[in-house]
Length: 288
Image 1: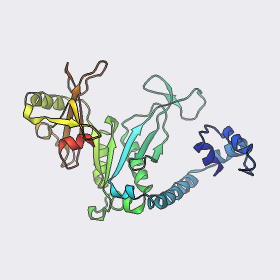
Image 2: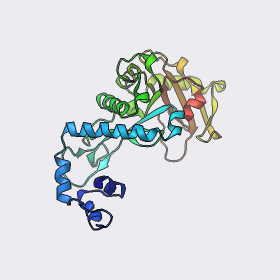
Image 3: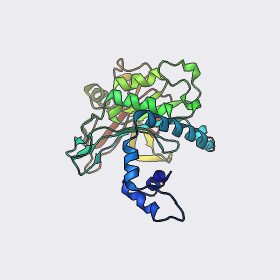
Image 4: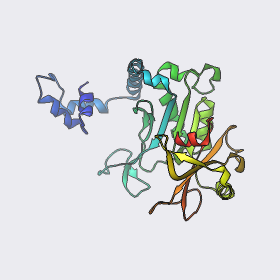
């Protein structure tokens, strides 16, 4: 409990527990920083799993008091983040692809509350698109949610058991067949950023000349975005390697100074796209 208070107050190391020790009227019997340090280092995998199950039980109780969570679809956001450190003595620290040094953890956030459902501490040289890591974090995230959100979303589960729809969102690091296949196996929808390839480039090249295909893009506030447009290229691109029902949606927006072209080389627009198996109009899917 005292450690949680330290973290909530912005603490960054075991030594920060001294801020509680000096407030004896509020926090009596606070352990020393050396005791806390030993406790953290003596935690074994079984204890960590017990903590995660205990956290899941608390989360289920808290979510019962949050009706807005139950009105929306469950959305899982995956992202890897670089954490720079300044010591070569840290366990598993390694050089990063950006020339730094530290860790490259993979995290999954629940869009409905903003909380972290699962995380994996990885060395700095860990691959951003590691399929095994993404699938492991996906399974841990599902297990961390209340039972109604878990139902029907375990590997090989019958789709009829699904009580709450789930969608996994990821940047291009999640754009792998292994990850989207794992989502489909767990009855989880997916929405992953597309990587540049010749097939997508050819589809965009064809669509550029067909002005009737494009629709005005809208922002998160629902208002039209000036100069931006959305198009579906599912019928123009071979998606046979992707799960059945996969769609390809592309958005173009004015190329501002310093921006890099991604899916298609162009002097006026920047193109960005994603694969998804969600139903709906392209403009609304792009807004999602």
